[in-house]
Image (cartoon, rainbow, N blue to C red):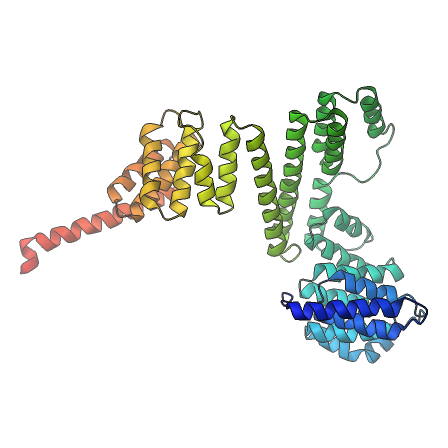
Length: 449
């Protein structure tokens, strides 16, 4: 379930209720009940926004702590538990917030609210309820595990690992959870302080002794990257740029670290999704992919401006534009690269791909043909193979089976294991043979008898 769209008029109403709640919470004449009612209204209408939930808990802090036993909670709040069981999100949240006004530390209600939000993919909201549960019950295993899951869905891997590690070591965890913990431990930097001399201190001394050496910052950042300590590497390079001033090597390294950190997080997410799609869902995976694509595009744009005569960066920018669906922008970028440049073969391949995406099929075939017959000696093998494959598939779709067979056959000569090309070629040959047989049958004297 996804949160419903909130209209502008509804958003204004929620904002007015929120501001009124803050007034009721402050001043001399505090009215905690009114504030709770107003904030509950905000949350039920917009359950995904943590600011309203946190304000509600801040208001509840003024109420007395009245612990309640689990069986009394289940009996008194049976409407809430029934709504939660039936996954009626709005009703469950409304009844749950009423229950919290009676007993703000009710562990069962807090955890169940967290689960309700998780079912509705409201991961940030679930985090609020679960953190409140752990505030009053720091060692509760159920709340700890649920919070670890919510943080994982938000791609906050370091925090998630911390809570996974809070579960008792002797607790029998299912194999998928063990795989998740192993994946995070393998791909994240160690959190324990190293024994002996702290390397950070020695690096700090090196920097103090030679704070204007670009090479020193590059070497130290590379060490941090090898340990997956992306934030520290970014901070170090930023510090270097501040001390030295504009430096192309440091700028390049800073952009590379930033880009690779996003790629690394996406790779972790892919692995976790493969372990169990419910542990890290497709929406989170898509968000991370979009973030990676956006970051890569930004880096390529900056480098294309920084190095206007290095056409490799212009080509990379065009590839990023094509991957993000901006085919016309990619073609415009490709058109600025001279045909005499060493990237000519790959530029021609990308030109064909962009034309093909724009359904400009004749232009696409012309580009592939130019690469195959004109730039064969300049193209790397992988580039040449892609041109043969895409060109063969496209020409077949356009009805030119003879050229499709020619290009796909040439591809299989240099790459016999290209199974998809072989399957396609076999289909083209079968269709061609059938057409030939039909034509012979239609023209033979026996066909009229």
